[in-house]
Length: 279
Image (tube, rainbow, N blue to C red; front, side):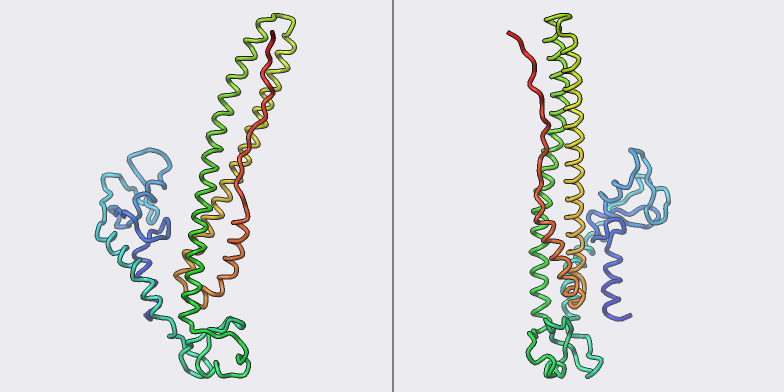
């Protein structure tokens, strides 16, 4: 098993199969499989005393789950070591043509170069930098992108929370306005029965239309948050990849990041017909 396989094998043993990330507060069942506590609890279909193991489908009970502090410590160490292990592999690839280590990266051709390739005429006017320099620059840009995505995600989550509160207020307003209308129209008896019916129907329709619009907006906000989270996950995964693969994926990630950052969250508020009144 080569060094790359060893690194990936180590990560596999320290990764939760549900969230695909390093273990956080892991617990281990009687079946021997381990998961993040929060990930495992989210897999339950309803509040019961038993769970189904996502790995072997065996029955697990809460009392059987044992906190695995040793695995938690190994995960923390593995997460800290991985960047250094991956970084140590930079420059180990060998040029197929010259048999020399590929230590440079050509910006124009987007490929690795050895010392002999670097002196070739076709790369004379190209911008060529040490592979480690390019990789570090790419990593910095990805980390900055990750930070911006996290801020954007928080912004959308804030707006979504406001939308939920607005929806609740809308439902409360419907109830209040309906009863206000009944009280007002009841004072003038039969003369305004027809107007009362029309008004109640209009309030109901406005509430219905408003709720539909707010639900559509909330679905849109939720989708935008999911898009941001997906891109964040892609960025995080790309940080662990080889420099060449990282650089090849960089353009697509930045383009999608630009598109997502252009989106702005909005709050949809319902329109209400003024409440009736009389002198």
